[in-house]
Amino acid sequence: MLSVLILFFLGKPVFFLQPRIGFKGKEFNIIKFRSMKNICDSQGNMLADEFRLTEFGKFLRNSSLDEIPCLINVFLGQMTLVGPRPFISKYRNLYSRELFRRHDAIPGITGWAQVNGRNAISWEEKFRLDLEYVESQSFCLDMKILWMTFLRVIQRKGISADGHATMEEFRGSN
Image 1 (cartoon, one colour):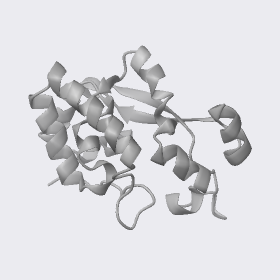
Image 2 (image 1 turned 60 degrees about the horizontal axis):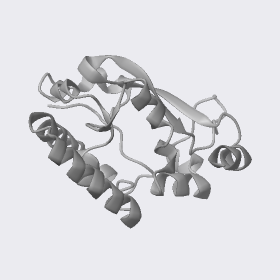
Image 3 (image 1 turned 90 degrees about the vertical axis):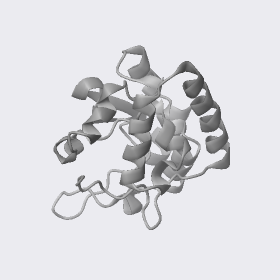
């Protein structure tokens, strides 16, 4: 049903694939439902998120329905339900050695940083929370995060950063 709605409101392709950094730094393609239109400027460069994100796309993101295809990544062993969110591959060279430790855990569809602010918190806070998770992983913590994720999705909290359609770009660590 969602695929048909995406085709109608956003066109082809239905799925969004993007290289992400996974466990131990291994790259994989995350699979999500597309939530933005492919609109380019006169030079062929993709426009900023705020110009490409439609009301339907906002609905997909706010409800986290765009994440359903990530279950394929879970099935393939590239992700788990809970772990640090995999960041885009272009950020790889911007990490300090300490921050790269977040890849000592398998990335997750949801994680400690997501339930504690998602995109509404700073990059520094995301990294701090991801490293906290890596150091204290447990079944009980994962169950707590899954429960908190359910609550955050219902509350629709932290979906975007102030002044951004999604999140400001990561510019590197000190």
